[in-house]
Image (tube, rainbow, N blue to C red; front, side, top):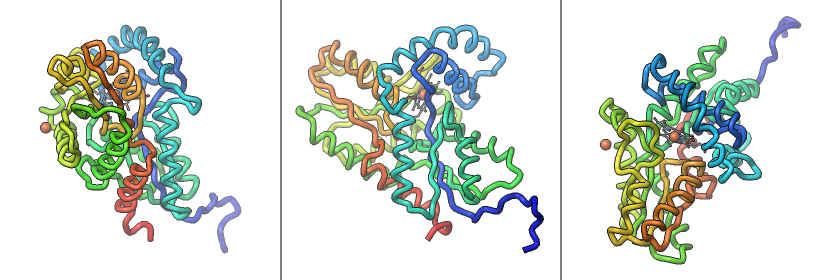
Length: 333
Ligand SMILES: C=CC1=C(C)c2cc3[nH]c(cc4nc(cc5[nH]c(cc1n2)c(C)c5CCC(=O)O)C(CCC(=O)O)=C4C)c(C)c3C=C
Ligand SMILES: [Fe+2]
Ligand SMILES: [Fe+2]
């Protein structure tokens, strides 16, 4: 071989898969939450207000007030493995790696916080991945989530002299693999309840209403997931949007408003699920499971059950394997 002695190492080419979710602070403490929120809420895909107007509000007000409150909420959900969102995403990646076998490298990343998308791509590249499938685990496309994750991928690519071939996993809000997984996992959980819910509330993360009029398909994707799932389950299903942020009008109805109104409408026993979240996190465990329950019971409800997200359940990993294998077609046997 006539390779010069100082030639960079040559690694056999591999196929990589990078799953990504939104992100989370490194610790349930004010400083760590402030760092995370600063990165998250400075993303122009998330807050579509010109930085000259938004940054003074963010730095002068929000980052001085919200981190302490949010850190207290994070402490309510933190586990021995850390943030639930990060711990579950890591387990999803490990389970998917076992399903795909040694031929495929699998890693995971958080759009905000750690491990970052760039660091995970560096690791995959260093391990030889020359073809990478990027899979943001957002079933419903949203510019604030899906497009933002793609931006992080693009930022990393912009710094690469030798770029890998890239594919990205499309949104899967109406994919039969996803609807099957939700049906199977929600049925399993509903069967274990010690009461029969009058209603199943499907709560999706909210977005400013104007994003719908600007052409974001997120609202329609949520509605379609809810309709397809409702057709499978023998239960009355409602849809609502949670986690309102800021003063603008958000998609309606709001989850907290529905929970407070149900008992007065005669709906006293409910189950609530959050099919738009691939992994349980602050917004499902604390906002729905703790504050949502309190709101519903205080309004006169008698029975409340929060159902887990797909997480790393068997149904979830079977779905992920199917979606990922389809996108890897031609790259793996
Ligand atoms: C699943 C889809 C999500 C969309 C769409 C989304 C939009 C969105 N979120 C905020 C503001 C916040 N979200 C926060 C937490 C959070 N959001 C999502 C998912 C979506 N967000 C997840 C999975 C999480 C949980 C993270 C975790 O660590 O467990 C937070 C931080 C917590 C808090 O302080 O309340 C904020 C803030 C906006 C403004 C927005 C769209 C415009
Ligand atoms: Fe959010
Ligand atoms: Fe719509």
